Image (cartoon, rainbow, N blue to C red; front, side, top):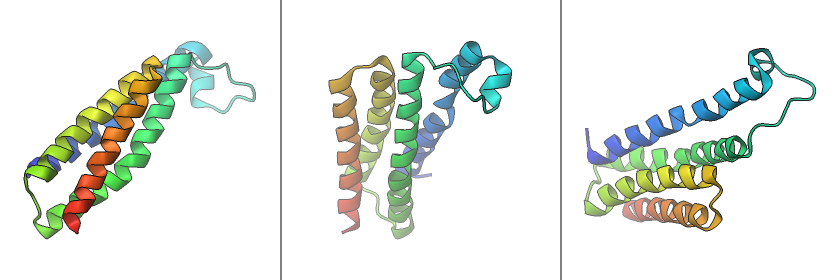
Length: 128
């Protein structure tokens, strides 16, 4: 497995577990029946859980671009120091984004998102 595919695996793993804390908060706040159902007037999640949910949605939206680029690069046999570095930085910036977004740190949230976006651009550039 290439370094880029390993990074993609880690990004997918991270995205696959991001939902757990905010779902647990939903169960604690609303109870199990309302957490798995569709209550008419659900109790609000804790502010950190709402932010965590938004960070998870953002991660999934950006995973589409990242995964497509990594898979295209892999199919074309393109792997170099830039692609490896961009993939590694992408993972860490997405983890940072999730944590600082959940904690409610606005400037670091934006910076970590911007860094991950630059990584996507770097991967895209390697295709051209």
